[in-house]
Image 1 (cartoon, rainbow, N blue to C red):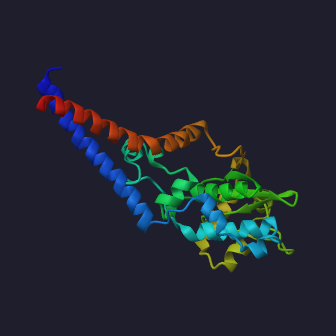
Image 2: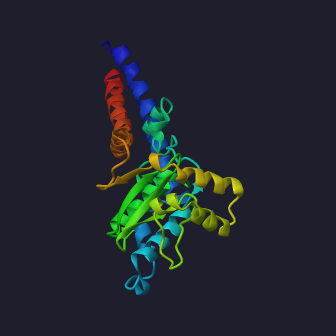
Image 3: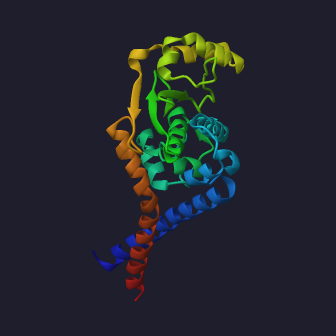
Length: 260
């Protein structure tokens, strides 16, 4: 490669690297000042006050967590923007699966919106970090989570901010609700949900043969593809910094050789 071509490529690297570093810096600054920018561990510290926590049951903890998660997001898909993570944003132009936020910490840091799978996985993570066994439940077109305590599973839906209890106050499971749809209808009517939303939820729960129950090792998703994309998301946290810096270093060296 002659000096002229090398220096021209060097200037190109400087421009691209500068823009990418600018996007990354602005994204981090905006996350600090204009978004929640909290971690899962910090959210755990905002739970029931310490004096009440000592006597709190697993159900009380889960209800507290669900209400916190439900209050953080509007119902919309959370995706990486160019300033959040430029590399995943670029890949998302090819396939939406790439810019779909999967990490609970990234969801808290970068987004004020979330879909059912994203908010349910955040709630599941809070449960696991509190020592409560939990699992994702894939319904027909919807995702909820269940927590295991008192020798049974208990369903929580942070996306639509609801759970159903029996006459004793115990939160019911997906299996029970699927077999007793009237409990769903009764619960959602008390929350003043529209008829359309209630009917949608009944349709979601009634297809018992399509339910998918996923008990975790930590950070496991429904499919291997989602698991790979989750790992890519974590690695891209480093890529978004390393690539611009490498381009700037290489561009500087190549343009400097021409000037010398």
